Image 1: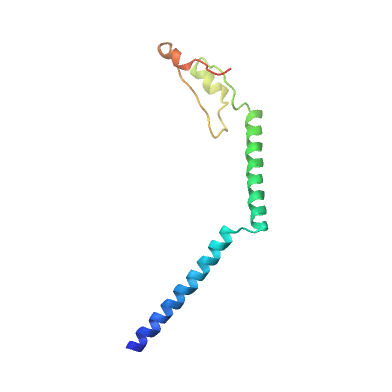
Image 2: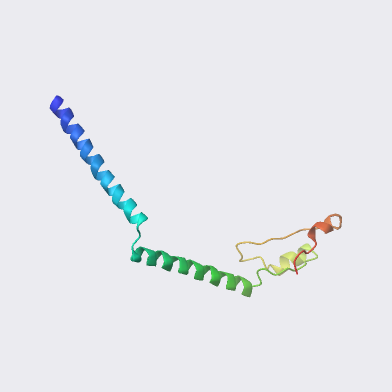
Length: 106
């Protein structure tokens, strides 16, 4: 029985040492990135920037960011400019709340 406990303790100790060595190697790799790691990070970042810029150009071409006044519900649903956009902002005003909808940007 004592021999079995020693073997088990030794196996657990070896496993712990192996896992610790793997973790140390991974931490060293993350702390000291190679030139290839940095190049991969830079490449991914540039791709993300290009995708965002392309999406921004597409939105501008489709009229995103424009301010327009719509005076009736029918006109709102007829214009349907917001269809196809991920985001849209609409401010609905009545005569009583017209002050809150004043345009603040040119």
